[in-house]
Length: 415
Image (cartoon, rainbow, N blue to C red; front, side, top):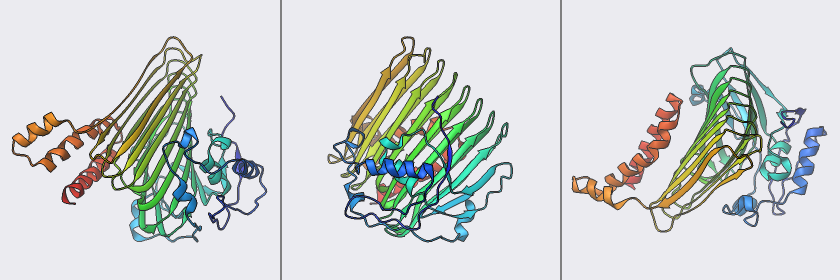
């Protein structure tokens, strides 16, 4: 396994501006890790569709933004429902009541398993982190309720680059729910990085409810490693946002690991939602399962690019990957690219992708029973995405997802 999670000290810069020249400029901080990040960032060009990794996502709009880091924000009454709150990248509220956890704000980052040289926004976050926090789930601790973390943008043209490190110690269990929202924010960019390390026999999940706002940009990167006999679940629900890009990278670094990823994305208008996943199977007797579904309307666009790597020593593994999409308009589009790269010879792997319109036969059947056409379409869309919701194991998050989707469907009916 690669040497990872090396802690180095970073002092966040006070202000960052994204200017016409196509690069952020930051103050010198002097730490070894920060210098490495700066060197990596300096060697990278701003992403463009000429690169395979960004082929179907145009990030040129972000390049044109004039962004400024906000000052420290204050907590508000509505933040009480959350255990941690990041507003414009600053940690504004720490009401964590689960005293069993070890939580601390810090200026340190753990080196991600993601390679700085390969990911512009990962390097950018490392250079200009706005706030950082580490959460340790002690060995053997089993948390019954999920830890809720709010990531909110407010104001105009703010840039937020928080970083969160999560360590599940041996035999522990904890679920995390990230809620992305906006409070009168516009043209804001949130570039969040989450580093996760899951020790042997640990389990947990990272659940994302993404509603950053129709005029806002969201880029997330979650890098996680698993040790033997661990189980990690990732659930991502993307509702609205001008541009959303999710990168999830998991290293299955021990025997008998299980990795589950579920995703739903519902762009409309001219929104763009892009999900990139990578599961690296390095040890035998592991299992991964991935199920993403998209419903695209108007002139929106989506991307699914999921890759599963099976190393030579990863015998007896199972890896399944599925991406399905429904296009509700002639102008919506999606690019789907599931990938398998296998070097072992005793494995069970599959991948598949479908894209189409709503099935006319059940639509006709429902209308023949007196259900209006719009309501019939709503029911079919709900049935389509419910398969993914049903796979989510965190009950509170599942209920929240259902409520949000029902509200979204009502809005679609009334517009």
